[in-house]
Image 1 (cartoon, helix red, strand yellow):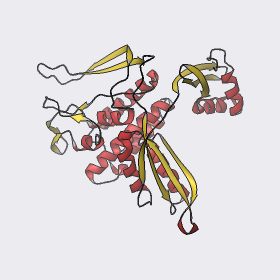
Image 2: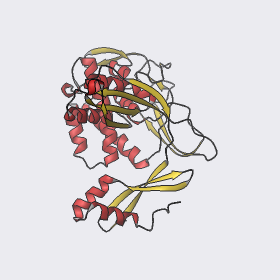
Image 3: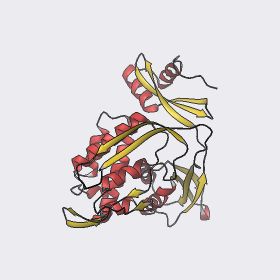
Image 4: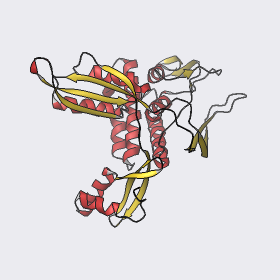
Length: 323
């Protein structure tokens, strides 16, 4: 099964738009790593190493869970990879496996003290696709915890993965929210190529991608690409820009940003449910924004214009009031 096959299955599924985005991003990360290891391109990869069906189930299951919980941020401690060797389709491989090593490049890792594969390529791809920060978790109160046991049995060691859902505690400042900004100018690419580059970058985990019309040397018209990413993803996304665009160089810097605290509520309308993003500034609601994918689906179903659907959604009495 190729990454394109897996992506097609996800896109055609009944998953929500957010779950599909998470799943396709993880598949893309996995495909790029496997293609690099095998000296080919992502569209030519076949996932015999990671077990295509198992990987797809793991990725989609995780995407559904994260979408359902709707966290504002995902924190991860240092990743324990294990060490030694593991037997794959090509024979014995070092731990971490080559694809895992590529995916985890730039992330904080440690071998641990157990001779086993503790982080698989699929697990690494999910961490890369989901994790907001590897900094210490800010002040929080635990809401719930989940535990999953694996099949391997190691003497004196519980093979258990833990995930914790928590709420940020008021009055305890969060870690600074930092992003990397990558910029370059391009004057010799077709608009279709720029659109494809933007699509690839979003699939690989970019936070934002935009193009601005600029005038370059000798009066040539061109475009300035501005890409935002998490600091840990900056190098990997910069490599994508250099490989999939015609630019000969780029520049980048780390910046701090301030964002609204966000959650999602579901509004019941006569035409069906619609999710609404709620933005809060220091606890006060300042933004209500219906999810466009849901609005578009309701518009297609009912025949009503998009602006009418949005007005009906925002008139719902169950929504919080703007402060």
